Image 1 (tube, rainbow, N blue to C red):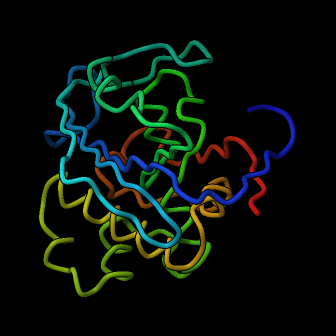
Image 2 (cartoon, rainbow, N blue to C red; image 1 turned 90 degrees about the vertical axis):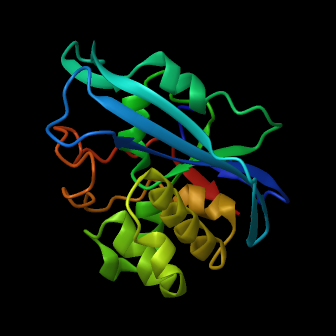
Length: 214
């Protein structure tokens, strides 16, 4: 998916996999530290997303690898990656997360699988720029104040609920293909008080492929 902008036509229906990765213990990130992956699949049809009942859960560890520049970096072990990809569904399918570019660097593997990504943080700021620099939970409470009890609990499942609230609010504003196109917009990075905000590359906001949506 290199070269010029890629046109995204509107999708009558698409699969979305919402996910989050959180540390299982406090402290600075290090090799061998346990992490937890949670993910949930949904079917997006127009402004409506229908979530599957099952939530994927996978425990794993951070491990030290060499990045593309030959420098030490932390990634998750292969068992966590296999818990997220591939998506067993017909395309189009979209991988969605709060700080997508950061999490995809943690996952390793082929960046183009699946080809479409939705960064909830960047897309939300296109509609609510005053939320710049706010964490996932604060953003979710802002867009769905009626769900505050579910959104403010501790743990990875509450973070997944926050992601669901953001995605549902975004779909009420514009179609999924346009949200994917907005996910490469240049914005200030998320706050450092997020669970992985102490990583050296937290502020690196990669743009990824450039899309033009119908």
